[in-house]
Structures are given as C-alpha cells and as structure tokens.
Length: 324
Image (cartoon, rainbow, N blue to C red; front, top):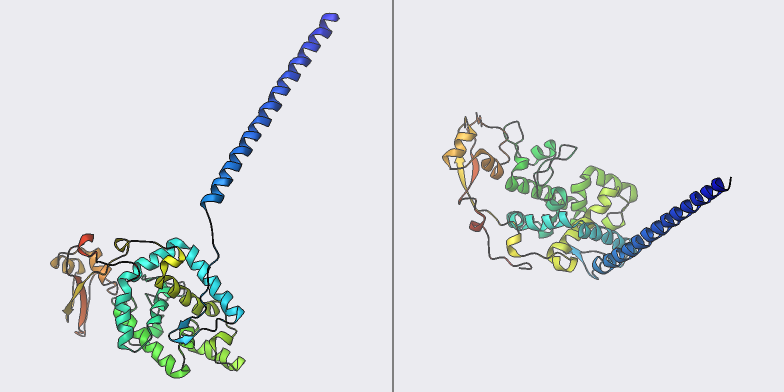
C-alpha cells in the first residue's frame, strides 16, 4: 500500500514538473513572440509612412478657375489625388506612357484649338492603352461604335479606326468642339464626354444650373473632372507626389514613316516581312488593322505606320529629364 502511494506521488510530481516546464515554455514562446512583434512594428513605423497631400490654393482646368474655396470641391480633389498618388504602379505607368503618346495628342489638340488639358481625358479614359470597356467602348478615347462613325471613324471587321491614335484623337477633338459650341465652357465639355450630352442636358434642365461644380451628377461624372485635375497635378510635378524616375525609365517615342496603300493586302504577315517586321510589330504600330488581310474593295488610301529603325531600346532613348 505504501509503495502504491509512493508511486502515485512520484507520478504526480513528474506531471507537475512536466506541466511547469510546458507553462514556462509557452510563456517564453509568447514573450519572445511579443518582443519580435514589437521589433517588427517598430521597424514598420520607422520605415513606412503615408502622408496626407497638400492641395493647391489655385487651380484651373483648360484656363477655367476651379473654385477651391468650396469644401466639397477640395474634398473631391483630395479623394482623386489620394487614389492616384497611392495607386503607385498604375500612376507610374501613366507617367511612362505619357512620354510616348502625349506629344502626338498635344499636336492634334493644338491643331483643333482644344486646350492642352484635354490630353488627360485620354489618360483617364484608357490609361493610354487600346482598352475595351465592358460596354464595348474602344481605344485611347473609348469611343462606342455609333459615336465613332458619327465623328468620321471607319469601324468594321477589317478596319477599326477607334484603335488609330491620330484619327481617334481628331474625332475626339471634333466632339470636344461641338460640345464647346453648345455649352460655352470646357468643364461641361469634359463632363459631357463622360456622361454624354443627352445625360448632361437632362441634369442641367432638372437643376436649372450650368456650372459643373454646382451640379449633382452620377458618381462617375461627379468624380470625372477631379480625376483629370489630379492626373494633371501629378504629371506636371510628379516629385511632389512621391514619383521619382530617370529619363531612361520613361517609354520613348518611336519614330515611324507612313506607307500609303490603295489596294488590297492578301497577307499582312508577308506585308510585314517586306518591311523587315513581324506581324506582332506591324499590329503594334497599326492596331486599327483588325484582320490578317485588307480587302479594300473601294481602293481607299490607307496610311500604315512603319518604324524607321530597329527595336533596340538604345535607338529610341532621348535626352529627357523629368520636369522638362
């Protein structure tokens, strides 16, 4: 009997010791983990920061004053600045692409007497890519088929000039000018591009107001002009919003020459080979050619862009410094 009690005591003592060791181990583990967590949090606090952004005191869109004295105007601009500043990867891509495509767009805007700020419409609409929206709007300027044809673009299975950067920019300018003749101010012109003239007219009539900043519009259109303004501020002074890059980081313009074609092309692949190109590169410079052939039954004159040099990047790097 004594031996049984002694055995029970020994087992109990061993259990107590094991439990104690376990408790000490668990306590030590969590204590060490807490110290590591504190160290990690301290490193995070010292190395990662998100700042509120300064808003400009004075701002204009296409030469028209933005009423920065109103709290809702300031807060709407603040929202778009924050979104585009802290979506760093997308905005940096915008900056890179703008270096390639803005010179083309700016020249056409000047030709039509459209304010330079309207280049940010293409940036906001498509990110300067040949995008296709869920509603089948296409290209840099996001034209729907009917609107594209109304403003002089050819759209069919073989040719879709919504993808033609120069021609679609000319069409967008014609839209802008028609809207300006109607509204008499550029803010409503930009809003009409997003909402359509019919939708904008309905709200102007309902609210008896022709000032963009005073109109209650759907969320997308009410944000639209502020997004253009945010992109303008960031691209004019990127360093003010934390974007730093070298000239060589930007996508350079690639010079091309135009080859006139007034007959059919049975094989775009062989056509590309004639100019020492592959089909992929031919389509890169001419995305408006939608098929591997061109019927051209009416003998229309088309201009096909052919790069003047090879595709080595050193050929195209320009002496560009940020801020120029």
